Image 1 (spheres, rainbow, N blue to C red):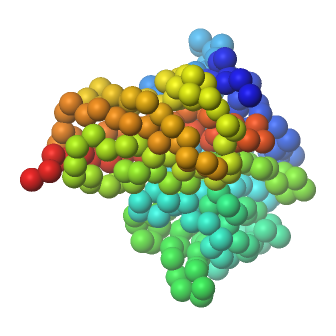
Image 2 (cartoon, rainbow, N blue to C red; image 1 turned 90 degrees about the vertical axis):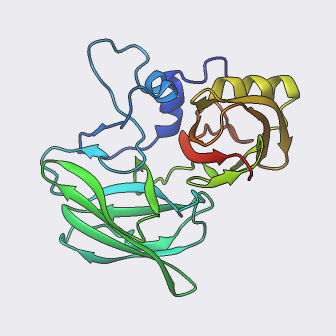
Length: 280
C-alpha cells in the first residue's frame, strides 16, 4: 500500500467524519492550537479569512445554537500515562437533562472510546473496571452554547478526542493507544526509542514507506531530539530510534493523521508530552 501523498490534506478529515451526522444541530468544532502544523493543515487547507475547527483533546468541543435535543458524541478515556482505557464499563450517573440518549451506558471499545447521547446541562459519567471506580467526569452542554469537560476525578485522567456521531451508524476509528516514553512521564536515560502502539493492525510498510510516513507525521518540539530509523513491530507498533542532544527539558511529540490502519482508516491526531533527564 502506498503512503498518503498529502497526509494533512482536508480529505483525511472527510474520511474520519464520513457518515457521522447529527441531524438538525449545526456545530463548529474548535481546536486549541492553530500553530499545530498537522492540525492547521488538516483543518484549514484553503481558508484564508475564515477559521475552521476540528478534533479537540478536551475543553471546548462543539459550538451549538439553542440545543434542546440529544447530542451524540464519542470520546477517548486515557489514564495519566496517556494509555487508552479499553474494555472499561461506563454509565451516566447524573444528568440535568431528560434528553440524554439511549447510549447512557456501555463498554469502551478497542480504542478506549465511549459513545454517549447527552442533553443540555451537566451529564456525569462513571467509569469502572470489574466494579471498581476508575474515573468520573462531567460533560456540560450549554451556555454559552458549548460542551466542556469538567470535574475529572482523578484529575490526571484525560477525556478528549471528541467526535459527533449518528447513533444509527457508529464510526470506526483508528487511535494511538499508548506510547513509550509515556505521556507525562519523566524518562531518565540516553536517547530512548520512541514507541507508538495503535488500536489496530498496521499495513506491512517497507522501510522507505515507513520512513516517509514518520518524517511527514511525527513532529518533535523543541528540536533537541531527532528521529532516526523507524521499524515495524507487528501487528500494531512502530519503533523509532532517536538521538537526543538536549536533556532536562520537556518534549512534545505530535502524531499526524497520515498513518492509517491495515483497513485504510486514518489516525485520529494525537500529541504526548514527556520530560527527558540525563541519568545520574
